[in-house]
Image (tube, rainbow over all chains, first blue to last red):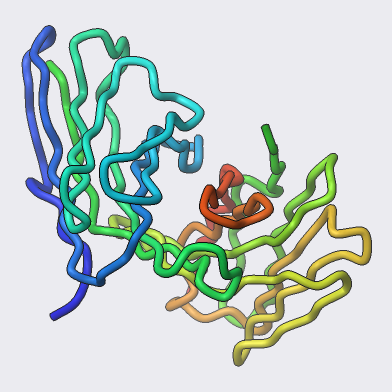
Length: 116
Length: 113
């Protein structure tokens, strides 16, 4: 069954703790993205990666970090430096790069993070 | 970076009525995509528009890209309860190996049966 998995669906952490959100895809996609969604705010890009061992900051990268050691995996760490970490986090992937016809992004089910 | 303004923020309709959401940019867009997110779900790709003046239809949904490539719209004819959700437009940059999307804030559609 091809797709994107994110785990866990719900995550609770205490303030001051770092937490890592998982994102795995078996679509053989090159590009992967992390978004944050807050009520009424749409999706905002945190980090993205077009290829293994390379990634770029998005619009709201402060307080977050990522790695891309494998094509299938793009974990996101929410650090204690992120001032308002409670949000819905969505991971997405995209197929072949360089062709507009492959721009569709496929989203995972998301992780709802609550920091207490 | 790119910004896209989407209106309205909310729209409530009676089942059978039509619905339209609009997406506007102050700069010329390379391409625009539309996504639908059901309540509690994740965004799902609907369509991509690339050409100036392009119009595409998917059953009761009609998507348009403005002649100046600065605006786009999604129109749903005769809404059904299955249309409930948030509709997002997303502007893509010029593509290539650094492709990314900038999302509008979305329009939440609710349908009264």
